[in-house]
Length: 235
Ligand code: ATP
Image 1 (cartoon, rainbow, N blue to C red):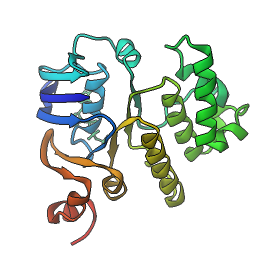
Image 2: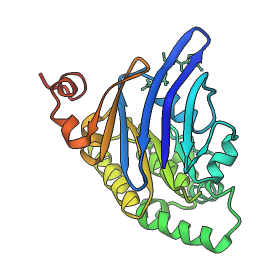
Image 3: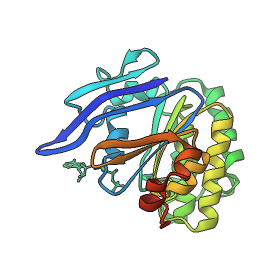
Image 4: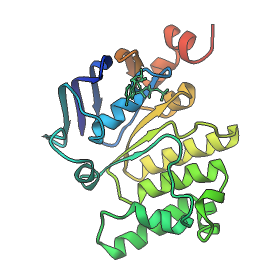
């Protein structure tokens, strides 16, 4: 579905991505793990057309994404739920969700997806009238994911959805990710919570200072000695 080849990104003198390769087949959950500053967010921003690359290719459903603007990339069915829950604090939950569908015109489809989001996140339905900025951190994270779903993505990319959440909520967000996937959405998940993301991922990549140093099936990476030492806190 999406294929990144030899992607290089520079920020001034910083070589943030150094020729990475990533393959995202349709209907899979792919995860990208790595320490702070490894280049995970840069990878997502490049796919969305928010960061310019200096070399390499990003192919999506058989065509290059590099020539498109972010808005066109969203219309093609790719959505990024950014790190840090960037919701609109002064708008209600429902208004935030409606904004997620800004690029769509099919009113009936939008209403149906609103119902689907409310089914996935009953808490959002209960609080549909509440100003988003007064919701708890976990609720805001769910709203950010719900808003992403409102644009009806084929590929949903999530940047650290479990960041700052209490353990129970982390569990809940990962089970919701699995459910979204079950409904037919391809997922690219970026996480520092390597254990939880490798457990649900079909395939994972490990990024270190701008390069992919390791890749494999989620299950295999979970038992890989290097991954255990560096990312799972096991000796
Ligand atoms: P984190 O988990 O901390 O979010 P990350 O793996 O997502 O890290 P990136 O945000 O992609 O890492 O950053 C990769 C490198 O590029 C870092 O060294 C970072 O300081 C640098 N970088 C990112 N954005 C910019 C920018 N706009 N200008 C200059 N350098 C940048």
